[in-house]
Image 1: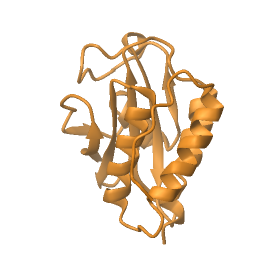
Image 2 (image 1 turned 30 degrees about the vertical axis):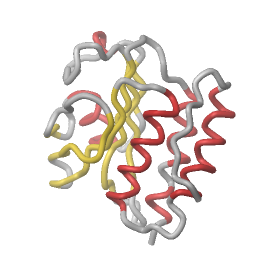
Image 3 (image 1 turned 90 degrees about the horizontal axis):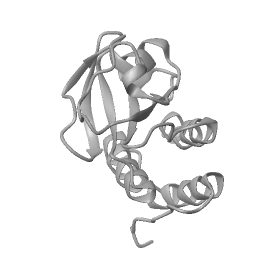
Image 4 (image 1 turned 45 degrees about the vertical axis):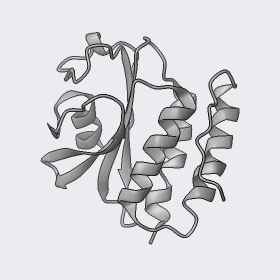
Length: 163
């Protein structure tokens, strides 16, 4: 399969995510390396939707510390403590966090001042262990919703199935 990026902007979200999921599964067929998958998913998500920042923060100290992993966009924060900012909150609570306005989120960590809204999705491995969080930032307020949450959680199921 030719590994190409898709531009899905302008399509209804649910249809765009369904197409993207098929594309990701095809590109990652036979791959079991989680870092390669993070890099690939970051790229495909970023270019499909034209986000400001799309990437992973990997768990390097369980329950304590996230460190930047594969991403697309401007320079990201290098480390984030569990419980700090949107990424740390999602990691500590093990749940997706959707923020319509990052400036209204208590303790938001600003890596890029252009960020206006954000979604952070926990990434679980085969044993249901937290291995990372996916962080996506937008320059526009209220970019992310329930459709994004469900579709991204489903897409990230790849990591729990890789064993």
